[in-house]
Amino acid sequence: MKSAYEKAMERAEKFYDDDGDNSLEIRENLKDIMAPFFKAKINAEELWDELKNADEKVLAEAQLMLVESIGLRNSTDQIKRRKEAVVALESLRETENSSYFEKAFTQAQSLQQQYETQKKQLDEQVQQALNGAQGQQNSLAAQAQSGSANEQNNGMSSQMQQQLAKKLSDFQKSYNQRFDKLIKEIKDQIQ
Image (cartoon, rainbow, N blue to C red; front, side, top):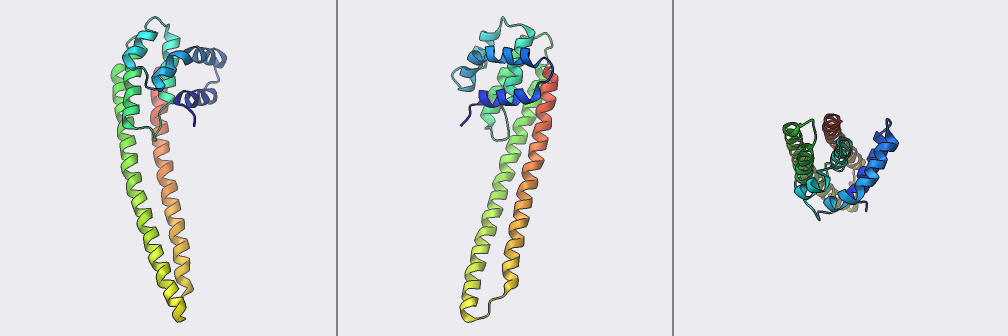
């Protein structure tokens, strides 16, 4: 299993075209400072203290690493920790967009909570459909023993599976697009 830092570094390699070597070099130097934060060994204030004398570019890279390490599968607390760290580092920068980051991370937390709630509902629907299909299969088995099996019922099961798979795929795609858009907006604000 990869750490949040490793995931952030992989994403960084994909996203950075301009000044990429310098950016990756800065990130490599930040690794030892950021790793304890990602492992929850230090908090946002301690991270701020570690980076209080860093230049603008280093602060921006640290913020980008924090933003790139969040996703829909992070807990609300993980997103909150990253928000606190991004806002703390923003206070060291000349740009001072703290209120924007507060609002954007609140949106990210809200989106993540909506995702979890709807995912749970969708999981329940899938479970109900599976239970219904199992009941239908038991009924079909009884009908087959009595000689009155109907092939149309088997087709419904396949159709239902396709519908559930499409619904799940559409759900994931929709939330991933919304979350990715929000992350891109946050990253654009950092740069």
